[in-house]
Image (cartoon, rainbow, N blue to C red):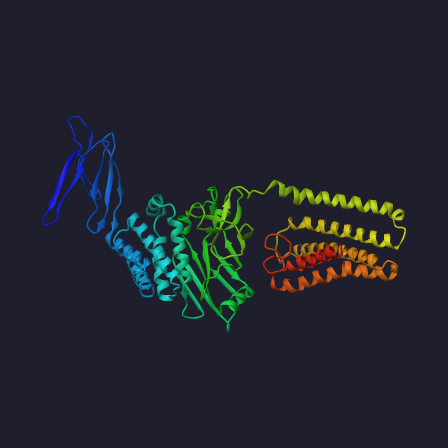
Length: 549
């Protein structure tokens, strides 16, 4: 070890410690070599270091192994041009400059920098580009900017080139240095694309590694948002007219954009939360809704994902699950999450319905998605036990009917109890069919199962209402006796006619719009508000019964 003093004309001097490895006779060493630079003779077990070539900052390292052979070159060089632009972006983020003028210029520069005619891109160059893109997106979002189609086209051309890089070389080394780079890259793409202001009511852009389709809606033009991507595999995205109209009434003018990224699956890890045993079964599609005051995420969206041929042809049966990329998972590294999404699958496609907007795809698991054993017992054996118990109670009612029904009061009471039990029995029997059938508006059997399940469960609650009303009458009008012939038709009308009208009206209102069924089971849809035709009457009846009691 030597203590050296470095002096310069008019610059003063500086001292530092320099370690020098002495190669003695008999020591193993790595010979001098030219590989991405000039490497001097280096003693075995040491790490050689050289400066980066002109135009780049940093150093390159190379290990000389104990047997006297060279290892791979560790390239820590970064383009000075890229570092300069990164520092300019950092200054802009710190408040030095105008985002409205600087961001479009930086995006244009980004497109030119990654043009194929430019010099070779090293791993740290790619990391610097992603960092710059991330800062630009943060600045643009914080400034509530809007980007014209020219800037978004420049941006997506740069993204298209970056997605074309080899994931096993350039991207792999970048991810080894910073695990969250894939999530950061996707977040920047999502944010900047969402800022698009199309030149007309519709805008589309198709590049080798991505496709973008956008629509503008306002108070004078409202329609459903439906986009079909003729990719391989194909993708569809759909937001209902009701959802679009609701947001337009609140925001006056909105832009909805759907972006399909064809190669980003090679950059994003396929893990589901902390589980890495799953793989992506389709492309990644990002949908954003931008209003004047910023992004709107709580919007219901329906999607159809075609599955890759390699996924469909797997010998092992795989379970498809709709997921979105959650940037906050795993301490900011990001991961796939199924929260707020429902899925139904065939061998060819997976249909997804989610209650928010983000970047979505389909995860394929070699094993079925685990289901709680307790839920299985409650939904299967519990319902079967309920059916057996109800059948036993109806048999008992039949056997003791003449013994317990001695007057009008007991007749009214046991009539309501028998009909409550009968309605619950029939509803439970139809309910068993909801999990056996594939939910589809084309399936008449599935629609029938949903209708009769709705009808009989409603009938059970309406007969509870009849029983409560009879009890109320007996308490208030003690000496007023009701006639069986006059009351029984009214009881049947309330107990069966009212729920029949509600169930029929629900089918008539929602089935023509293909919004009657739930996406996963043969039951009323939550998304289209069809479920309210069951929930609201039940809540009203329960409230009335509580007040009477």
